[in-house]
Length: 418
Image (cartoon, rainbow, N blue to C red; front, top):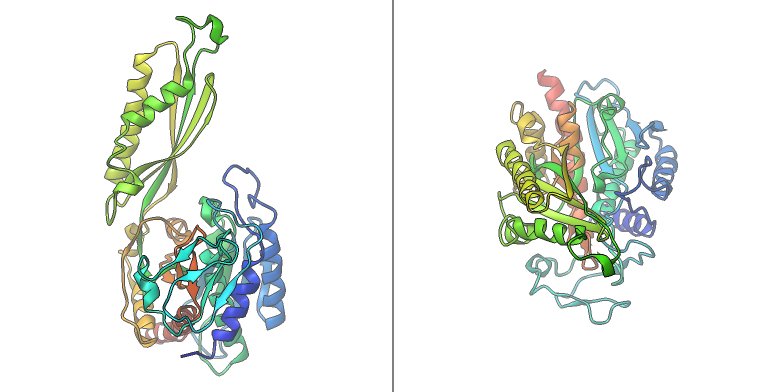
């Protein structure tokens, strides 16, 4: 059941996972955390050692490199992307990867969290992985397979092409991006820096998945200023910003239109945080929908709720600012499905049936596509991400590696037919 890439993929993921590279949405720097550069510098060293060309760190802290085209081959320039940061939602310091070799089909336990169980009864896809090599963390951290599994896949495929010059392929540009988890990794500079005709992110879950549709996303920030006064003298004077914030939350449709009550193609308004005091409160929301009309309606609803609560207490000041995050990449990709068609053919060649679904989230490809470089998303095998039950099958990562190599050779046919 093991493949030619399994040992390398396992080694890479275990090695990358122990490096803390968590991003921070509250930091204004680029990258948002300096620890991400530890991953970036390691990748630059490894790329240089394997013979990649043009290895650089861009002004936006993106690691860029080139796999040169095979001599005499004409093909579109393709990009492969993965992100180096891990999610800020859960502890990512002190990751201790554990390899469960030849998974036996039972519950997986965790050395550092004895009460924690990863059960195939609760997660049925795990039951299909009997005999495969499963990697988890030790129970108190996330693993970071999102997206270090993608990093491992891209690096393994790149190394294979560089060491096998007889494999005909066009020029491939690599990009390892910071701050994907906080939506800031891809900037308007990246299309020119990448200089690819189209690209792929390796940042998906289930084997066979090729995704070309994502949420459209906005962020909402609600600021509430009340009237602060000593509570002993507060009668008819105090305006408690915390109470008004609670009213905003309770007035929103919290039994519908939230992440925990929606699925499939339903969008939501998600209250991410509420911080402050009786004097001032700041609330952060994310708004998601697959269609722009739905996204705009959610923004209008949040503003309306703020106006309604403000009307109940004219002494308070409530503002609601909504900003653009990313847009559904389908709007651009459906105009030319060539990158998607190439990906589905690569998946079939790897022995899987392609699965296309709408991502209930976004990828770097969402922003890159919007900025002008078409960029569908391809699986890398990660499961249960952003928490202590995160896991990945080494063999699923190997499937993604074969898909990457099939993309490289498949693009040659596009060049021949151009």
